[in-house]
Length: 114
Length: 244
Image (cartoon, rainbow over all chains, first blue to last red; front, side, top):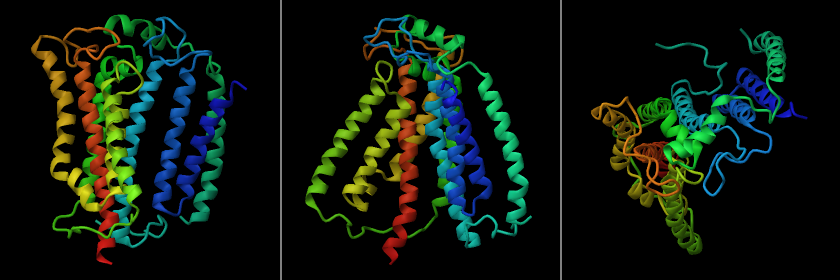
């Protein structure tokens, strides 16, 4: 099943989007957004995998040994850390909404206030 | 638009999107059949050229250093947004709370764990060019090991080690330090963020050139940013407890 990792990435993306649209709770919504985002990590790491490849670290390993792509790994690792802080920002906004509107159900926040 | 209508409109769109996504994903090279040129080249070039044995870290802080600077500022701005929203002026702060932890064994074992965890985190940052690790991973681990203080000791102890009065400046120093190291290359007539100082000896702490300082700047930034975030959310949680 060589297509399975790609389908897993696609599935994570789709369930995340479904969660965002049908959400009735801003915190749940923020976490669904994070789920969608993690699908890109699965996809990136899948794209960079080389059959039989080791980690792209050559301490005590002969140079030229088959190893996976370091570029997609570096993109993934920076994004994981950054996404956590962005999630914190969204949660802080949710706290603020709760303070102002008294609810965190997006459907009940009916009016926009200037 | 009611919730029911919204979902009814959305589901066909999602089905089309899912089909297109699956179609395109199945058309790219098979799992394990990697054809990208950059990873192949970097795996062979990074260690002889920059003397860094961890190619992932070499990509993050050297080959794609400019991109990482952008990422770091996303992190910086997100944390600033959280602070703007949550840090209120003149909010009453609890002096101390009744400790939830009554067990001396947990307190002593936990306090020892803090030291061990801090050491491991610093090791992760310092050896980021040689073995798995780096500023991002080590920074998160460092912040998490400081949060252990709150978990095993008290709110007051946490405030003592992670007070915003000195965590905030470190966050700015980490973000600014990255740019300053980039600008330092300009003084020598080199392009922005060029790795200078020479590559050093591969596999030792003296390898990596100026990217080592970028690594430490990012470690400091990530650790401070996470501590600020933990601090703000802990206060949201702790202040109502103190009132009741």
